[in-house]
Image (cartoon, rainbow, N blue to C red; front, top):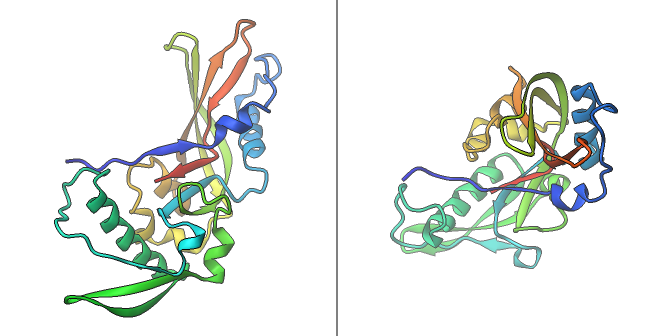
Length: 222
């Protein structure tokens, strides 16, 4: 079964604060989209948050466990699949310095490791603990508009290309960004060797103004 990822937007709350901008105010979509991304990511360090796992603050230091029956084609919501993925991610994030890793025993012939956040890991930690431990980084910089699509009734989609600033070295490790294959453009965005694709979705209001419903900045990738 093909693996799936769920991407949850953080924009819902902040969009309530974002004024409606009319088309005549922003004929230049590049300018508008850049302002929207910066509005929803004012620190320039939270364009995307990658979930390490469902580990909350009071669960550290965290010791892994094993659940029998794992196979790679399991449903992505199966508890066994989720636990195996967590163990894999903790080990890889430890290799790039975001966790400490300590051998504390064995479960049969399988090693048990205890993990804790390093100072480096805490630099990128999302302090809200939404969904567990998430590492955030980046600012989206719009390079050019690629097209505008009005095919959906009441909806406008604007396609663009961008690069990302404030990208830490740890996410450039293929083993790390490959953990999130369903998040389109992540490899291009973090490596910067080619433009990354993005889309902003707008609902068309009664006065023909546009209201952003989904944007590029502010996503949790699970």
